[in-house]
Amino acid sequence: MMGQNSDLTWFGLWDGATTIRASLQKQIQTLETNEVAIVAAPKPWYLYLLECAGGRIYTGITVDVEARYAAHVAGKGARFTRAYPPSRVLLSLSFSDRSTASRAEYRIKQLSASQKRGLIAGTYVCDFSDFLSDAPVAESSLKAPDAPVE
Image 1 (cartoon, rainbow, N blue to C red):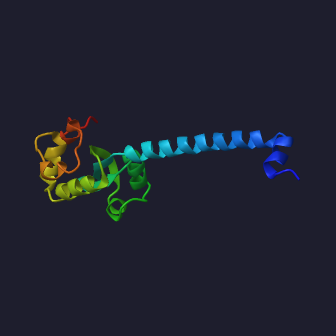
Image 2 (image 1 turned 90 degrees about the vertical axis):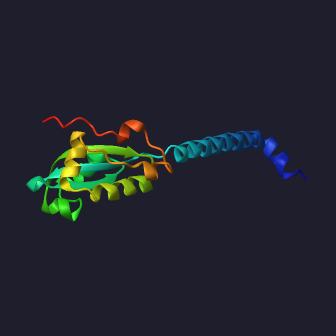
């Protein structure tokens, strides 16, 4: 009686199965390599300030400022922005991870309204250096932008 491999070889299936197995192993290896690349390059987190009704300023963090702003405008954001609808994004700063963005958010929320306006205008500097050593950020993201153009 012929063995199992012999039967498969007889019908020409053994070579085909080996080729398929090798192809699948290559595809799995490619997927694993791509997964590593995805994990190695996380999206940056953004701290943003919105101008809201009554001249109020809202501060938050997100990975997508445009989408988050749209959610606030649609009334699906924070309770504050439902009560005081936002009119525009005043400032957006990028950070390497959520933890660092959260610490920066806390720091900004401790500022007075006039200090926040100074930060937006570029006349006030908020020092993040005490926690940025843990997660470096592009230097340009720490500078206050030029005053918003209307």
